[in-house]
Length: 61
Image (cartoon, rainbow, N blue to C red; front, side):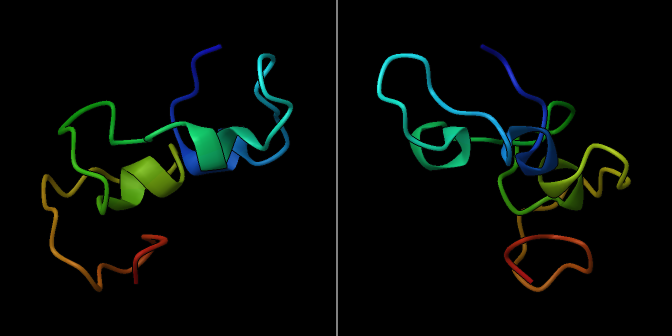
């Protein structure tokens, strides 16, 4: 089961483990591949191409 961001994963569970998908899947931005990019948190956010902490809209804010 593929997801594009944490927002899409929040209400889904892993079919194999039954755990929340966001806990068992390493989610990164589908454009730049960075985990701290705001686009990895929510696909409606812009991709910044950055992995710096503290970005507005990132779950790692």
